[in-house]
Structure formats: C-alpha cells, structure tokens
Amino acid sequence: MYHSRLKNLRSAMQEAGLDALLVQVPENRYYLSAFTGSTGALLITDSECFFFTDFRYIEQAAQQCPHCTVVRVQERLTDQLAEHLAGWQGRNIGFEAHHVTFQQYELMQQKVPQVNWRPVTDLVETLRLYKDREEIRLIRESVALADAAFAEILPAIRPGVSERELAWRVEAFLRQQGASGVAFPFIFASGPRGAMPHGVASERVLQEGDLLTMDFGAVVNQYCSDMTRTVAVGYCDDRQREIYQVVLVAQQAAVAAIKPGVKASDVDAAARRVIKEAGFGDYFGHGTGHGVGLAVHEAPRLSWNSEQVLQAGMVVTVEPGIYLPGWGGVRIEDMVLVTENGHEVLTASPKQLLVCA
Image 1 (cartoon, rainbow, N blue to C red):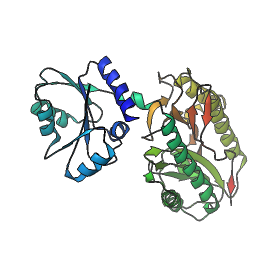
Image 2 (image 1 turned 60 degrees about the vertical axis):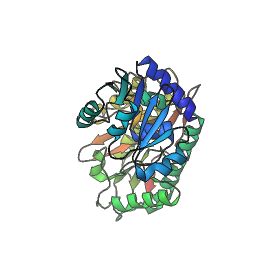
Image 3 (image 1 turned 30 degrees about the vertical axis):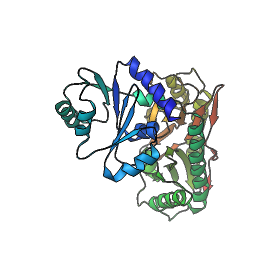
Image 4 (image 1 turned 90 degrees about the vertical axis):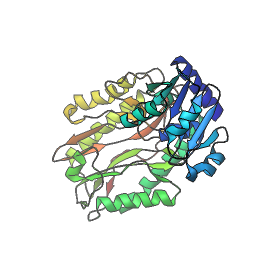
C-alpha cells in the first residue's frame, strides 16, 4: 500500500519538477509512512524514502516504517538534511508551504543553501482525496461509532442537563468503545446558542422547548468521522418544525446531487437553492460540506466557489444549516461516499425531527 502511494507521489513530484519532497504535515506523514508519533519528517526522493526523527521515536519508526530508512535527528532536522543533501547542488526540493513557517524556511535556506527550496501546496493532499478500500473500511468504522454515540446520548437529553455534560458523555462513550480521540471540539449548542454554527459546548442548561444541535466525531485507527443532528427538547413548535424541514429537504437535495463528474459547487447550490427559496438564504453562510479522512476537514470543499469535481473514492460531509440570531439554529450532517455510479450515505442515524423528553 505505501509503495503504491509513494509511486503515485513520485509521479506527481516529477510533474512538478521536484527532485525530492520534505513531508512534515502529520496526516501526510502518516499517509506515506504509517508513523503515528508526534515528531518526524519524510524526505522522499525518486528512489528512496528517509524518515527523520529523534531518540524518542527511533524504535517506533523502525517498527512502523519498514519501507523507510530511519535517520536519528541529533539536534535539528536541518543538520541531518544538510548531510543528506550535501551533493544536491542546484536540485529542487519541495516543502509543504502551508506547514513550514517563514522562520523555518529561513533556517532551511541557511543550513542547506546549495538546493532550491520550492514551496508546494496539496501535492500529498491531492492523493489523499481518493480513499482506497482499506481507508473506506476504516472510515466506516469511525462513522458507525459516531452513530452509536448518537443513539447512546438520546436518552440523556432532557431539561436541566448542560451542553457540556452531554458532550462529555459522548466523548466518554466514544473512548470506551475504542476511539483514540475526538475529531474536533464538540459543538453542543442549545436554544439561542444554536445560532452559532461552531458553538462549542458550554455550561448552558437545556430548557423545555430548546433545539439542540450536536456536532461530533471520533478518530478510529487515525480516520475521522463527523456528524450533526438537531433535536428538540421537551416539545417542538410549528416554526421549529418548519425550519427543520427546510434544512432536511436542503440536505437531501445536496446528497441526491452527489455523483462522479459533478462539481462540488453544484452540490452546494442544490442545498442553497432550497434554503434561499424558503426565505432563509441570508442565514446559511457556510459551505455545504468538506472532505473527511485522516483530517476532519480536508479537500474537497462543497462550497459556492469550489472548482473541485467529485470523483469516486471521495468522502464528504453534507451539512447545510439555518441560523437565526436570538432564536437558534438547525443543522443536519451526514458523511457520504462518492461511488462509481453515484453515492452512498455512510451515516445511519435517523434524520426525522426527534423530540427528547
């Protein structure tokens, strides 16, 4: 698996005119090496793969990365790079522009001045767009665990419980069931706080008649899940039902639009059209979705300005919402796999409006 990924990367490097690539983004590093530690860098050439790390991770790297030559970093990575690139006068070495700071870039130029340092963007990320069979299996496991957490938390949703308590219960369940971590800080936003799309769990106590938006996900075997459901607490009035139905129809329209060859912006437009026609266009200000894999937010983006074309093997979220200041909000989110003939919704939790006592 890693040999084929490296082969594909080397083809991309050749097209970009690179003689080597320095990889430090944790997700990219794992994708190409299987290394799960916190410190390390890959130097990939046309025929070799070096893994640089310090004393703490030498044994781990040797076990997890048998296809790499493991190099111990004594003090600074740039010192080891200077040794390995000593004879590379005038060659082009790529580095991940969105990860390396200007200070680090200056140090690389100072320590290894004989090469041409080239900033690159999305070289590895483009490969990660297309999930292979094993990646899809792992994503399914992560999604299934999030679904189980939703079913587990429903009986606990009632007036008098705080958003933070519910969030902790979900996290505890995920970890007890095998998650290595959470995919992001959970969003539990009730009542008027539901108007904040990223309203992380607070001490606010749920009240009768609230809507509660819950957005959470797990990390299982390095792969993330991401789902959102909005439920009513105690009872639900007609306006809440109306707005919930608009979001549900918009979400279903966007899911239905997903298939290979469709522009990501067209999927966004399918959801946005429903919400706009219902009179809530000004209250849906974020994109309809994003890719999920080793990172919880990765390409492709389902937004009005995205130029990405969907292809089989991509995994995206579909999560339109309506957010009314002072009133609250509704968001519904599924993870969806783009298949050869269309799509498959991976999230199995019910989407009808649930009223929790």
